Length: 498
Picture 1 (cartoon, helix red, strand yellow):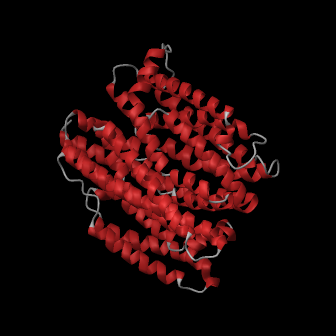
Picture 2: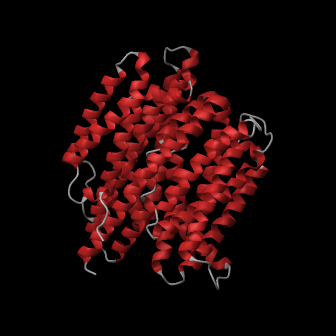
């Protein structure tokens, strides 16, 4: 196989993953909104904020327990020195041992999950969810190594969100206190089943495999820098909620959580590229084809930024109408939503650059990530203090603080993107071209059209959502397609001929 043919196949694989991810985003959006609507209308912002903070702790523990295998598994499988089913079994064993430690710790100290409220009902046992989260992530990463993104979309974009939406409504009538926790656990168990079944069909049973403490410890030790980098990157998306929880009431945390959930939808577009881009990068690293890596990182980076900028415009400009769908008390989170959507666009370059950095300079990448967390914490706390001194009514201070931490996140992620892209470009010896002039033109046109819709009288708010959102996306997408996409970019929208 020629190098040119390999590069073409890589682009086709990335494009196929991109098509599937965009489809998955649409499904995820359709499924996430019912959950937010049910949780906001039935449980209210205070209960939702309490639930959100507990999830913050549990999912952070799950990130650590996954040992960086969400991205590191591709490197292990690419070596090919042992049967792939055995490598996956070793990875699962190591991660389950780490999950057991994390679950036991938080079951013993549940106050860390619920610092501002009492421990009741099933609260103490929420950390058992760590096992399901970690096992699902590793299974889907193994499937993605074979370019099976459909299973990820099925588990993450269909089964998990629809299960939690339906279960939240059902369990409310069983227990308004434990309903959200029960719904969350049910969604994780359902997603785990739909991850393990295709994993078994794809790789088969690990016949002849024997557990080995030495191998498991070796996997954990090798992946510690990657695990820390994953935790730092993930923490950058949750540190804002943790900081806000220290200064604001649970109700404000609940409002911010809704804004965060809406804004995190486009985040899935780039995070789901990791297992697809990872194998492509590792193969080119083995041949030292640095120019191709720079090209692929730049191309995927543009795809992600283009998609996220369009989504940010479509959801951010009519932000009051979007937040109002969850409940009238959530409209105050519109400012936070706007900053969070902008933060997702700012972070895209850092994420695709990090996909290569974790293989080329994982320790230095980790130091950069930790540094950005420190910047985020300092900027966010500083902006919160400024928000406290604003001449506004006391009941609005919390909402301004929510917008302040979102702004801090946007600033830190923007700095991180600049630093990591420059660092990767230096390592590769080639420029990484992500931004294109057509993107700026599309953003400007979409923003002007969006402002025209939001200037309509309040009684036409439904027009903003039903007509305005598709119109913004349509105009924006047409400009990107017409002037932003080249020949190789257009493979994102067409299947490879047989």
